[in-house]
Image (cartoon, rainbow, N blue to C red):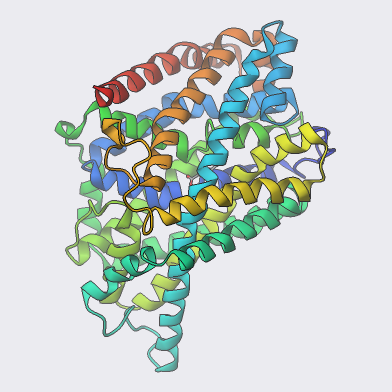
Length: 476
Ligand code: PFF
């Protein structure tokens, strides 16, 4: 059944429950799973991080996913309008809509640097594609990637890319243009269609490469690394990272789910739907770890490679492994698909708001919002070369060393997303009309109590503690 929900712009909504699930899973699964999660797990010692991360997903992430989709559907507008509607109907101050504004701002800022990183992915699709083509031409389809290059040359490609602002900006522009194009095409004909094509393809590729890694790489070491917790590695900062990552990965607190929720028809049972989204996202993050680390360990590389893990470490591994050229090419296409289905949800949030606010046509709104995000992204790209000395929040301990992109990433992930999540938890747990909330979630009496406890108590307390202990020491 086609939803009657939608924004004032008359947007039609998802054509089915499964279309919504694919779109929401598409929003959730992205660079966060394949780039950020393995990077953080690698840097923070593996198992302990993974365990805390899963704890956050189950106890906070899942209840909040349900909260946000529910709010979106109940409000039936863009992220700000929806919260305002629910507040009004609940008889509380409509200033709560500020949480929608915070979320849309977060999503918009994330989009700006997300597209830059996705541009790197395009660069590697191109490089690996050329390499694979070369392998095919030379008659050796199963050649390693970057044949004939030394390790330094392969890792140096990332440095070459970073040193070239024009190239970074062009790639960023290509990705942003693709995102704008899909969002401009509409919820039904753009976002839903993209997700229904790209997500199944993504899953097939993911399984293939994971099997490849298990067969040719060091699977045992990867499993031990990811699942044997060393609790001495845990610190407030790591907890803060894990929380930020759980929120980022589930697309929480960035306006995406609130907005997508408004397009869900009234007859969809939200609780199991939220469960599927959280489960799919977490499974993909773990699978990404199981895909990447066996390959990293097989060639004796460092799992704590940082953000360069998939761009420098893995290409070196692909160089040494059988069929590396082919697998490397497929790997980067996979990441590209994942990034695109996420970026469209990041753009949809602010775009829906602009449409509702100004009455502009969807195309115009998507282009304008996308262009402004593009401009902010350009500063991130320049932060690797002409502005490499710039430290936007350098006065703050935890951001003292971070360049423009990492500052945006860190500020949104560690501060804005937790704050946005905290506000959702407080609003849904304490202020929104409980009967309406219960009816929307479709939870049984018992489950509703558990869920409400997690949203009203567990989430605010945990998020506040993490914010306090993760950030305050950084200020001192
Ligand atoms: N969840 C996406 C990822 O893991 O890459 C990123 C993201 C998308 C965050 C949409 C927030 C959002 F609203």
